[in-house]
Image (cartoon, rainbow, N blue to C red):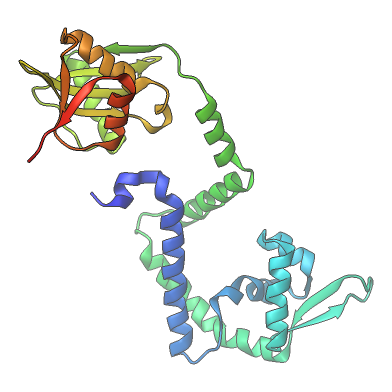
Length: 280
């Protein structure tokens, strides 16, 4: 399993940026091979001026949902290259109108065939059963959620949310199947076999689990996992304490770890339990 599959949505921003960088790099290759001096970063502004005619800086900024300073910097670059012209508005001299120059119009005319061919190519990149309008609507929805700070606000809410009563229990046979499904959804590579299992439940939702094997002089701790949103809230500690109680381990009891798991070691150190890491 690659890190992109294992991290799931947590790495969404990185994946989108990687896709964006690759996409723009591929488009730049086309312009270069066609002998067109067109920077991919110019596209949003020039496409807007081509489709809607002269516009003010404020309108361009609002249409593209980009800061006024970023658009101003872009317009200044285009003006230096004589691609756009900046003039005071006829009705209000305080407003600067941006329009394409003759050179800018010629550049757009050169770019039009590339845009048309690129649209056809993008249709082939997407899966055949992809609803293109639905796909674009999804991107718009994500953008709006981020613009409204939904991601940061909800994440902080989850972090500050105290878990309800946590129940530590041994799963029944049908619950084991539920546990396996939950582990798969969490992206955890672990298939329970003959180990003893305990699960942590909060409002009947699985939030953690552990797999262990009692031995004569120790308890082999094969696995312990707590869903990220419930970490640092004592769930791992409760699971470890319940293992000790279930195995009737006395003061001399200790855990054996099959691998050096830093997070698990922190839980054991915090709980005061003795442990050893198996040497291979």
